Image (tube, rainbow, N blue to C red; front, side, top):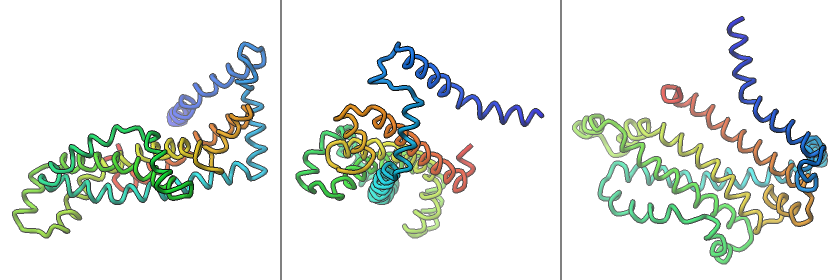
Length: 255
């Protein structure tokens, strides 16, 4: 009985606040405390969302955005982790590159979009580059920090027995930095979704961002909110999958 109550509480608490907010929004919109032109009732948004799902429009847009996020994430994450581990283990490389990377990291991603479009055009390459560029810095800095948090004794022991550089990476640096890499991956995946939706606003004809922007241009607020809801659900699903992967791969660090 106590276990059942605990499980019910764990489910109800995260869902309670959103449900209350939706009910308040529904009431305020129908009573015209909120302008229904800009804040249509959630029930109408749900109907529009389901209609777009059944027609396949929203599923197609979701698939397009998801493919861009996953491919762009992979293109940015793999070199970031490799370089981050090298920088974490080799101080001269870290001293040479880290100041430049830290200086580049705060640049707003949307600010470089015009340059990216000039270089890569309006095709898929520009979208993938925007995601990869955004993910790269997050994962790189997290990986460097993760390697530097490894107990120096472990690295000293490995070097004292003259293990090869590859074995040092595989047996010490990789497992030691995995928790930081997992954290960076979760942050990077969320950031990748933000970037791709923003990029699709102005540089795509399909995808969730393009759907939201088109709805805004014609003041189709129900479709706009449906696109936002789908983006939220996609972000939640990706984070949940990464969280599950973290628990399976490094259960000692997942809590």
